[in-house]
Image 1: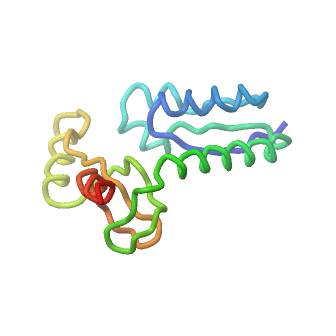
Image 2: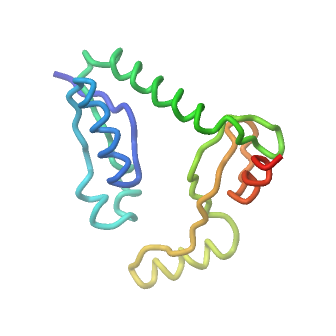
Length: 143
């Protein structure tokens, strides 16, 4: 039995929701590196996040479920567009760590053995790579 990684998550909640969705479709799946990710997010980044793995024989079923999830997400975000290229394809809750504040937060976290507090959760366009905030999306939705 060979296992294939189908999706990687940075938090337990999303990983378990995806696992529950796959199991509701009758697909056996397993979570790898969940415990080390639960201990500290920095450890989770070091091992590459929480990996959802399925049997190689279930790949067609998983592709179908992933397509359904992507379609549901598209229907929920019909009116969200990138302010630069007006694309409707974007990453939601993208963690942006740019600028000197992020560097300073990472340095303090490293010196105090803690989790970096300064992280902006933004949207990132899949087409042009532009990062935009939720405030920009609300302006577009109101038009």
